[in-house]
Length: 92
Ligand code: HEC
Image (tube, rainbow, N blue to C red; front, side, top):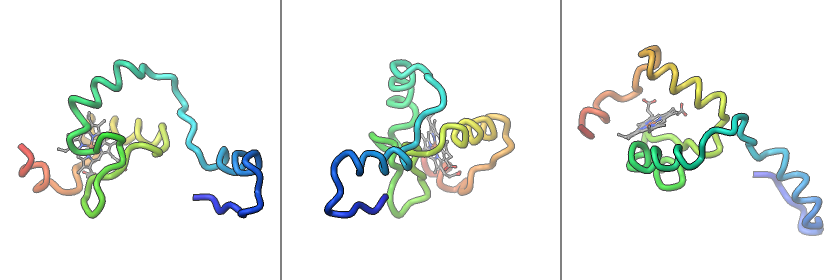
């Protein structure tokens, strides 16, 4: 989180905040993605994609678009192994 000085105006804060927000790099299909996320991903990664604290489930929201795309491709190709196979075995 950026550090705000209490004397800063809202505009000054906004200028700083813009530097740390992750702007999605692709348009994507929000309606379709939302539906898919809800049925396939939400149970683990959480309603807002924040992952779960004190667990191996990482947050997805706020993560870099290109990084996420790379990870998903790696999972799909079998290049990225799941960090904890036992966790997934327990889920199935
Ligand atoms: C059964 C629970 C579960 C479900 C359902 C699930 N995930 Fe995950 N996901 C995990 C766990 C646990 C990890 C981290 C462990 C690992 O790397 O193997 C992870 C890691 C990831 C990562 C890598 C994040 C990083 O920081 O490297 C991405 C991206 C991801 N999941 C996307 C998705 C998407 C998209 C869906 C829905 C299509 C989904 N996951 C469904 C449990 C789940």
